[in-house]
Length: 153
Image (cartoon, rainbow, N blue to C red; front, side, top):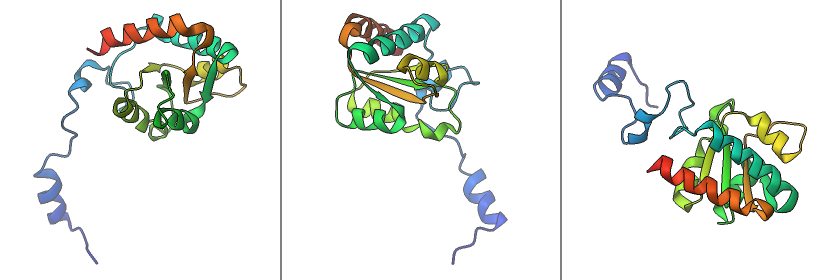
């Protein structure tokens, strides 16, 4: 059985700094945001994302919730993923930005999970959602993706 003594802890953890390295985008983000937020999204882009989700839920095909959004991303079907910033605990959605980057799926951070639920037409909040087929929101989704590409550069 391995026991970690205070001396071992001090040598291992304090001697080797315990911070995440390699996240070069963290300097551009408000420190009050959750750790998984990699870039700031302007309010008008977030509002457009809510609107696109609402239109797509009526005329296209969407996936509600973290689990369904994850599956849509993994299957390469997600055209745009909305990730709420006010999720507790944050680990629920922390894997989504990494997965989206890996699968080249565009994603946008939005401030309120309740607004995702409202846009979906459900009575509860949703930590994430994915648009698979935009329907009548095709032009709006394309515009959001273009704005995100300018922001993330």
